[in-house]
Amino acid sequence: MFVHATVVLILSTVIVLLCQAPVYAAGEPQIRVTRSGGSLLANAQFVVDAPRADVVRAFTAFDQLAELNPSIVASRAEVLGGGDVRVTTEISDCVLMFCKSVTLVERVSILASGNLRSEVEAAGSDFRQGSSSWTFVARGTQTVVSYQSSMQPDFWLPPVLGRQAMQSALKRQVAASIETLERRYTKGGKCASCAQ
Image (cartoon, rainbow, N blue to C red; front, side, top):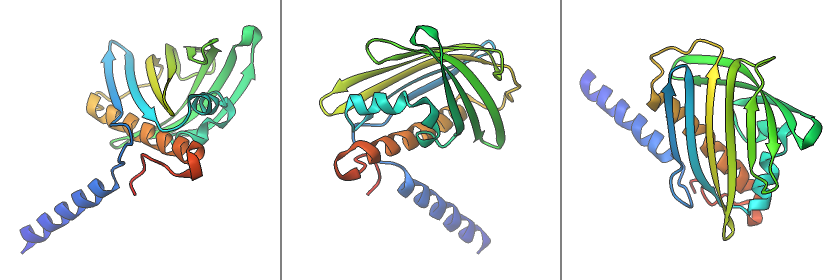
């Protein structure tokens, strides 16, 4: 009887989790996280069912980034010379049972194309060094977003945090961002990628 109850509980949990999985309008986001030496490398590509101009505007509203990503607690922006912006982001998230709050300070350049490039500023940051890029490509009424980063944390990450666990956390964050963007910018506020 105990074994049967345990199996039923496990199957019920799996079914609930599967039913909560997002259904993406333009395919599953492609996400890859690896470790190289002391750096974390991340690559992501996903499609947002919203116009490019709106997606770029959302990603460059640096003081409102917490609205896009549930792991961002707060963000603030300081305009620098040459059109660059210093963005300070407070991030809090858990991967498996490891929870951490960190500060990321970046000098962000908004390119003429609307794409973004950034360099980590170690002063005030929990990262020694790093860089990232965001590209936004219009595809009809959708936007293909590509993200690449290499970050060297200045804090300990347990070796048990494998690539799959970190990819899963990033995928969860991307799914939440896609849902937020689509609810905000699609006609009638409907999220095409959200489970109906």
